[in-house]
Image (cartoon, rainbow, N blue to C red; front, side, top):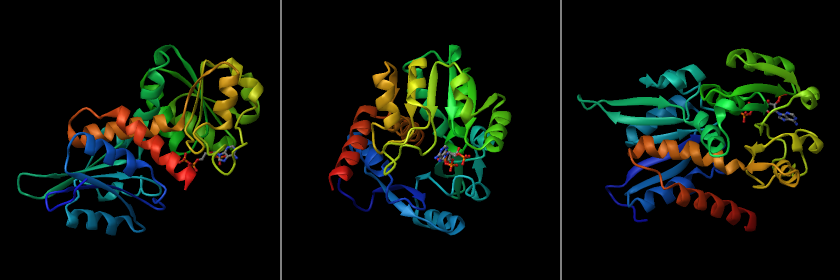
Length: 280
Ligand code: ATR
């Protein structure tokens, strides 16, 4: 990659953001398409100042991660109706208007990540999906699956939060202690259980896994979590945490470039970066 006066600026803002795999994924995509674009991680504490800075520096597109997905909304000129409904933005586009003024538009591609990954394996319209967790990730995943016509069930350690999300999605809730009573085609873990250094953590008893056709984890470090390892051993198809990251990123790539994202290259870049970090 050569950076010069014509390089277009893209990036990700969050706090913390140094661990993000998105720079590896997007820079690989840009390079493959021969674009003179660069994508950089930027730690931002004050979102208002961050947005002012991005505008001043002429950024063209930015990903937003924790903790700014909701707090960025007041600083947008336009918000996509889906992002508005979810109440969270993970993608920014800076567009020059006719008068030369930059218009800042916010969108959300998180909800597409799990959808796209699962649609490769099951017919979502005919699937019952049990989602464990009720945080921001569960909200985006649940929204996408309900949109796609799946029957969704939310389960969460804290019943109050779980019920609130289930009500918002218009689906049912079951306490985490009672998941053994649920029969579903797909299980998705949206909690951090099983993430390094909690490598032996698993959010449901392994004995339940044989009841699902597909088990998906949003945790990607380690890439094969204990949940996925046990699910494979129980004969389930598995979807790892890089898939959701890839597909939400591929949707961003499409929004920014208008072209087809080189998904295989982007996936390899994610895997390579993960491997590099494990070795270093
Ligand atoms: P994110 O935005 O990534 O979804 P979050 O909003 O902090 O993160 O949500 C984390 C989710 O993981 C919550 O549903 C949380 O359950 P609670 O609502 O009970 O806090 C769930 N979670 C985190 N650690 C967990 C654990 N050890 N066992 C079960 N659920 C856990």
